[in-house]
Structures are given as C-alpha cells and as structure tokens.
Amino acid sequence: MFLRIFLLNCLIQNCKIERKMSSNTSRYFTRNDSCMKRSSERLKKNISTSSSVHVKRDPDSTVQPRGSLSTKLARKRTIKVEYDEVVDTQSEVLARNDPKMKVTKDVGQQHADGLDRDDGIWQPPLWRDQLAGIKEMRKMRDAPVDTMGASKIGDSSAEPAVYRYHVLLSLLLSSQTKDQVTKAAMVSLREHGLTVENILATSEQDIGLLIYPVGFWKRKAEYIKKTTQILKDKYNSDIPPTLKELISLPGIGPKMAHIIMDVAWNKLTGIGVDTHVHRITNRLNWVKKPTKTPEGTRIGLEEWLPRELWSETNVLLVGFGQQTCLPVGPRCTECLIKNICPIGKNIKLKDSPPKKSPRKASIKKEK
Image (cartoon, rainbow, N blue to C red; front, top):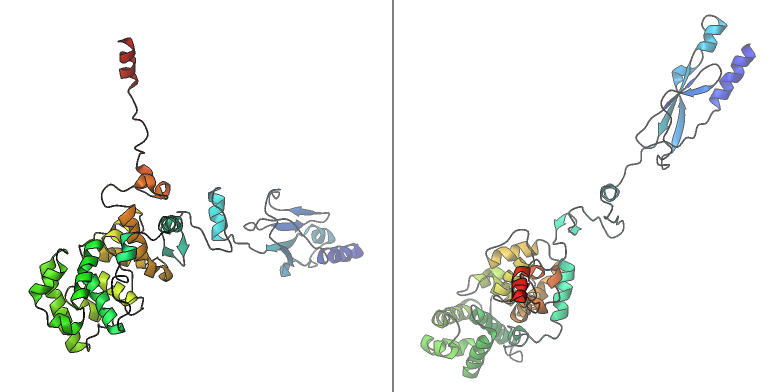
C-alpha cells in the first residue's frame, strides 16, 4: 500500500500539463485517489492558442500522513496552472471592433476616427491626396503668381542688398492688389531707380504717381518713404534680417515678413498666408476649426503641416486660387480633387439636365 502511495507521488511530480488556454482564464486541477479532474468548466475549443502554460505545484499540496490510510488516499492534491498573458495591441483591438479597419504595423497606427496621425498630432484625413491633386493641376506653373510673384519682379541681377529691397517693396505693394498691377508698379519704380538713396530723394507724391493704381496707393507711398528711411538709418540701406524686425516696419505684416525671410534671406520662419491660402485651407478643412483671419490660419496650418512643405505652400495655393478655386464661382467642375473636397463634392454639374416634374410632363402629353 505504501508503495502505491510512493508511485502516485512520483507520477504527480513528473506530470506536465499543456493545455490551450485563454489569456484571461485561469484553471485549477484537482487530484483524487484515481484520476485528475478539472474543477472548472471545459475549455472552449475556439480560444486563442497564443498563450503558453506553466505548471507549478502548490507547496502545500504534498501528502502528509495523518490518520488512517483511507484518509491519506481521500486527501486532494491541487496543481495550479499559470499562463503568460497576451495583451492585444491597440490596432488589433480597433480592427476587431471595425472589420473595415486595416491593421498597420510598420507605417504607424491608424485611428478609428479615420484621421492620419503622426506622434499624436492632428492632420486632415485626405490632405495628401488633395495636395497631390493640387500639384498636378499646378504643374504647368502658368498662374500670375508664377511670373509676377515677389521672387520674379525684383532685379535678381542687382546687388544682394538691392534685390532684398526690391523683394520687400514688392510685397508691401502686393497687399489688396492683383499681381498684374503690382508688377506694373514695380516696373515703374525700377525704371525710376529703385534704390534706397533714390527713393529717399523722391517725394512722397511722386512715389504715389509711380505706384498708382495699386490698392491704397497713397498710404503705401507713405509706408515706402518711412520704411526706406528706417533701412537707411538702422540697417545700412539693407533690410532687417529677423522676422520681428521686419514686422516692425511700416506696412509689413506677418504674411509679408515670412515670405521676405524665405525669398530674400533664404530662411524658413513660417507659412505665408494671404487671402487665397486662407480661403482654400478653410474650404479643404485643413484647419481644426474654421479660422477668421490669415494669421489664425497660419498657426493652424503650422501645427500639423510638415515643415518641408511650408516654403512651397504659398505659391502653390495662391496659383490654385487664381486659376481654379476662385473666391466667387470656383471652378469645381474642372477641379481634379472635387470628389474629395468638402465643397466640390456637393456642387452639382451644370451640364446635367434639370429634373422635370413627372406631373408637368404628363399634363403636356395630354394636351
């Protein structure tokens, strides 16, 4: 009888249990005098097989001789089964909840709201496709801004300080003015002699006549005179090298200052947002919330738009606004991104025939 107990103890010690178990389930097995019985319900057949099982003997489970032999045989032995917990990744949880969601492991996590995320930064859901479509429409570079922008109408063959002065004045004149008018004014100034010394020697009235009919030409003539004097006194006839100093000049705003830093100094300090960029980015929902000012749009864009795209954004969107996404009567039917544009996809084609009332049609047939 004692031999039987000894063999039974050896059998239990060498027992290895390998069962398929769930990552959130724990099981205990009990040993009677004849067989092993599980103390919980049977395991489900469809539970994941990813968990590995380890068997540990309860230190208190050894048979301690106490009382009669029948008492020893009736005593239960408990073996505790432990498991390795497998935690689902966030993408797997989302994919299980939404069958249409694809699990991406290498490119990054795609969130349930459908928005592209980069290190937790908000981005519009379709901005890459929209940008690619705009670049395709602008590949000819034949918009007015491409030939009459600030980098084009200055004298690039002049001395660097003189060219930077041209860039500054061209942007000062461009406010509330079409590119064609701005170019004509710059041509008149260059023919007159567009240098710091020559402008200081010219009266404010004559400057006004040279730049007419740009928008607010009288006020801009005053700004040109005051700004040129500051450049002579403080910057040795050159323009300020920092954004803060540029904004402090009369008639120079944040949009102009960022473009001046990019074109004149080749330093990227921010996105130049004018009325075109402001209008288009709000139409495309490229800002979290609708913005009321170009400066608010600039801040909203710079929060998520990759920095390597900041320099080209102004010219790209300005030309798109001049040719296709017009302020009034946008040409949505000609736009390549109309199907992914919040505004364009709701515009009905003008060529489609109007729907006729079936009642009126039947009345005409009877007549």
